[in-house]
Length: 466
Figure 1: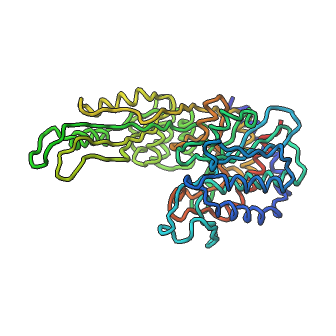
Figure 2: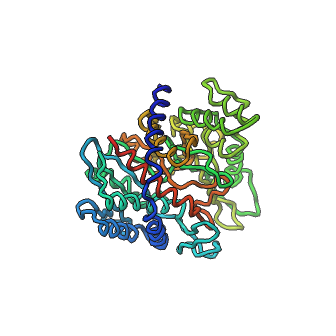
Figure 3: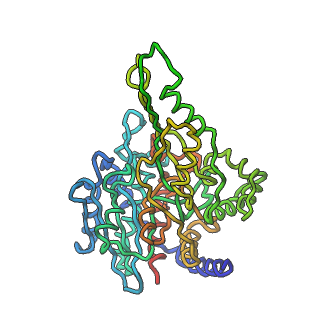
């Protein structure tokens, strides 16, 4: 299988080299900047919703010549501010459609915490600043620019290209767009494969690209509640059976516990390939954990890095805490949220049983706060791998391409749940030592944004070919 993959890579690279030099990207640079400004300056936090942004994209597509029948705005009747827009670039019908998707909502940003207005696009020092520049309106604009460019160029793909700009990913909210479309409008999103621009992507260090990660899986998101109850009483007569102390003891046991190492096909491949970019002990440890038999000592050393630790095992951490009724009363109850990210293949029930064991007190109840969405792995086939190599190496020759498991969550959980192979394909490279998504002064490099716009155009064309 490996020789087939490398053979396809070689064919792909030779084709890409012939096409890369004359790619007509110049006229669309300023347009993409204008689009980024328009979309960033629409406040699409959970409180405001994504409908205004969806309508803005709808207008741009119609103005570019798309038929109204192929640009469909959809919003749940009970959540009219959570709008989505789905566009279809009609192809030659030589295969099932492909789907690209990205969310329009952003996390909240407090202006007093930023050095610039988070809801204005600010260009300075070679960066675009603004809420959503990296997560993920920059990628939305890259997809929108690619669609407009292909339409104006008269490009007809072998297969239909569907792009969904969706609502409510960030807030774990009440109207997730991908989930809603799959359940209520499968006629609009009926692909053979899905590409999520909100996961995976390229990493830079000191301004230089060092790898591109294709997301093939993500950890399961599960929140467990630890809760204690007691009869309470007057604070002047303390007792041993104190709800806050009982909860605190259980939380300290969770803090001290580390789940066993659990490698998947994706993470073994990741460590094996990242070893080539490392040196010394880290290189040796990455190679060791990538082997079928594993290496406990190597895993321990790698786990000192929080990013590596998240890829090596299920993790659980206390994130919310409440308790007591009054300062002069013994607490009648106390509660904590334990946020867990499960390695694919581990069961929600199994983790709950382990947390219950750690609580080790009949007075501490452990239960799930909400149902968990299952998510498996999407195998990187030789065909998909070769298409990625075609595009990535046409722009960044020789750049390592690695399988990627997201420690966080993405909308790929919904497409994988209905059996659609799904891959994370963010377009904009980011500094691995300065990640600002969800944080203060979120930004992307102007050069990296421009490259991402071009990359998305090439990726859509490559993936839609028969």
